[in-house]
Image (tube, rainbow, N blue to C red; front, top):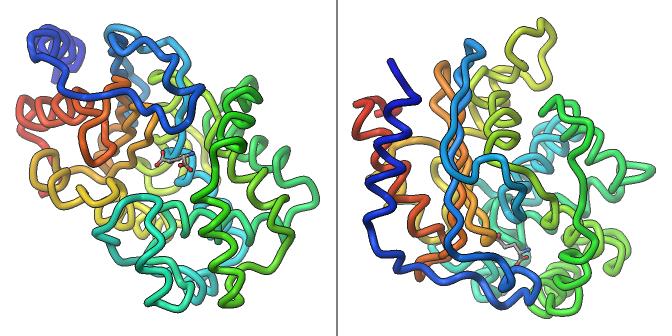
Amino acid sequence: MNFQSILSEIDSEVARIPDEGKVASYIPELAKVDAGKFGMHLWHVDGDHCGIGDDREAFSVQSIAKVFSLTLAYELEGESIWKRVGVEPSGTRFNSLMQLEFEQGIPRNPLINSGALVIADILYGRLNDPRRELLDFIRLVSGLPDVGYNETVALSEKQSGFRNAALVNLMRSFGNIRNDIEGILDFYFHLCSIEMTCAELSKAFLLYANHGKIPGREEEIISKSKAKRINAIMQTCGFYDEAGEFAFKVGLPGKSGVGGGIAAVHPGKYAVAVWSPGLNKKGNSFKGMKALELLTTKTELSIF
Ligand code: GLU
C-alpha cells in the first residue's frame, strides 16, 4: 500500500474542509498556537514511514502522554492498578467532577484527567525522580533522547489548573490519592506539557502497534497482553465523550489531546499521528478526526 500518496490525498482533501474547530484557550499558553497548522505522519511496523504538512513541528501532546504514564504505571504496578482506576468509558467531559462524587473517588478510566491523576499518584509514590524517570521511559519507547517538557506550558497549566486541583482533592477525600497533592499536580502538568512532532509521536506509538515491542528489538517493553489491554482502553476511552464516534468513524484505538494531536494505531500494521489545533465541541481535533476517518476509508483497513 502506498501510504505516502494516501497521506497526500488526505492533505489536499482536509485543506478544502473549513475548520470548525477552536484552539483550546483554557490553558493560556495553548491559545497562542497557530490554528492553521496541520501535520500527519505514519510509521509502519516494518520500518517505512511517511508524512505530510507540519509533521515535523513539535506541539503540546497534552493528554496523549497519559498513554505513556499509564504504560509505565501498569508495568511497575501490575493488575493492582485496576483497584484504583476503572476501564469504562466515562461519557463525560475530560475534566468532569460529577461522576467521581457518585463513584466514591474511583475514576472511570486512566485516560481522563481524574484517572491520569491517580496514575500520576502511583508513579509519584513509586519513582525516586518521577519527572526524570517518566521522560527516560518515553525516550526509551520513542528512541528519541531529546523529548522533553515545556516549562512554560507546565506553568500555564498550573496557573489555570483549578479543576485538576479540585479532582485530586476530591479523590484524596475518598482515600484514592496517597501522596503530596502539590507534587502530584506538578508531575501531572509536566506530563501534559511534553512536546513531540507527529513523526516522533507516531514512532513512539509503534510500541502499541507492535504488541509491546519496539520494532526491530527483541525484548518486550510491555507484555503482549498489556499492549492489548492498553489498546482496548484507548479504543473505548481515548476520546473523552466521543470515543463511540471515533470508533464509528475511524475504527482504530487512539488517544487525543487538547493540543490538537491524535495518535492512533492499527495493531500489527502501523501507528499514525495527526495534529491540527482546532478542537471540536468534545475537545478532539476537528481536522485530525477527519484526516483519520479518511485514512481508514481510503485504505479500507480498520480493526473492525
Ligand atoms: N493538561 C490538560 C488538562 O489537564 C489535558 C487535557 C487533555 O488533553 O485532555 O486539562
